Image: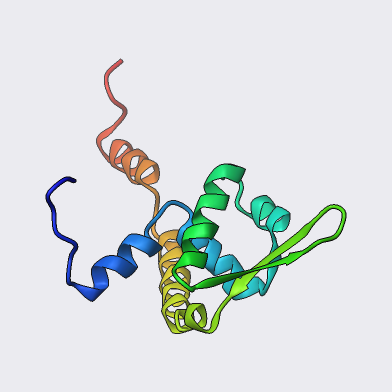
Length: 129
């Protein structure tokens, strides 16, 4: 927005970067799979366009989180990986992974809302038609 001063909060810049579309997922793939070619990244990110993936990778490269390695072959080979700065996020992603696994396990043990509704209807009888 016009007239707004940049935030002085250190979390503001990193959260804006990491919360961009597909960004965390891109970083997770590079974190778990190591250096990855553009086409392989795109395959693993079902639904992302080449344009958006390119934009996100450029932003991450500009922030010093991701490096780009270009091989002038035919066709050209472009590989992306995490820089040492990007590797500083390893513990963050490991902690998120632990939470994701725990929540998935909890959600699988919990009955779904439709199961709960069916159980309530069963106790009170079927709804009037």
